Amino acid sequence: MAGWASSQGLPALTLTTFRSVPWNGPYYVRCGFRELSGTELTPGLVELLAAEAALGLDPAERIAMCRPVARTRT
Image (cartoon, rainbow, N blue to C red):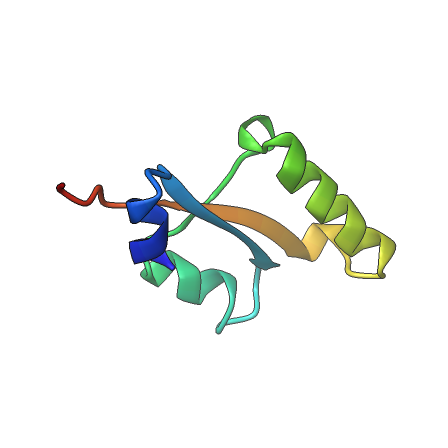
């Protein structure tokens, strides 16, 4: 995914995941992602987190994260 995102000129990868599950939030931190603050959330991420809550996922346990994408040289 990072290679594709870089080839498209995208600045970052984003995802939503569980905050505390060891193979989710903490794993992604080890992979270079960081949790986004409320003011950093895009309208799309806000909508995605709301949809997850509507499906019954606990909003207190969900986070949005991002990781910068290295630019490919052309």
